[in-house]
Length: 338
Figure 1: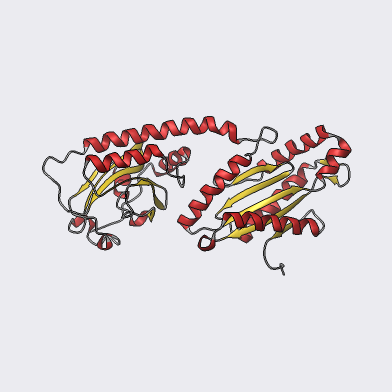
Figure 2: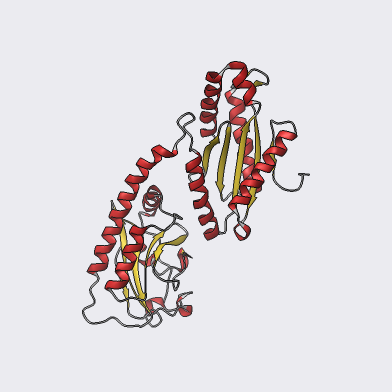
């Protein structure tokens, strides 16, 4: 009888390791696609896939067939058995194996045979799986799991190489003046945020931030003072307690932007108010206003109607409304607030 496996004792460390690889909701990559293709070819399988298991979802990084979706809730995942036990799993027939009697999704599946191995990273943490499936049930005589384990080890090597390359790449994704993410990083993270929100059904908010009367600061106090103000604002914005999945970037010139994954309109407004408070507390001098203030525009979309290009346009529109309204304020896109 099917019972949802308990999380492993090292679940917290496992999730921390998964987050460190920064792999969830990333676009397809040739290295993982090739491994899935090799697994399918070696075992004459109907489908092969590489997946990663978060606290709530199994997300498919690479898959050879549309017979397997891109995401499933962890509670409904077959692969969660390997996360719990740390051992390979081979099932001749998912429909008749008593361990999976009563499983919520297997009766709707046409795939019957299943074999999978864990993706294990140091120190003994299972963060994902490499699996093959067939429509035909049965385990052939002499079935050998070792080639699949070898491919899984290569997948882990690919992860490690990807992490090293990402660390090097980070240097090109940071704005040298403010220390925040740059425009390139913002654009890349927006694509990734869209993928995640479509998978999870979460809201996605974008915030565009402009320094009020920055030209007057530059002209009145000099470009050195303008650069110092940008650095100080970067420090202040960096202290605004963003979550791991949020991105704060220098969008260009005196404009900043934030990607807030999972924040609805009300949550984004709270973040914007916090940003303005942090900059106000920093008391950055301004020759006209006395100290630097911000104008902020916010827009929010939900997974069912998510359009990131339109989201940016709407956040910009809200920003211009904030400027027209007298600056030093936060405006959310949409009907006037009561």
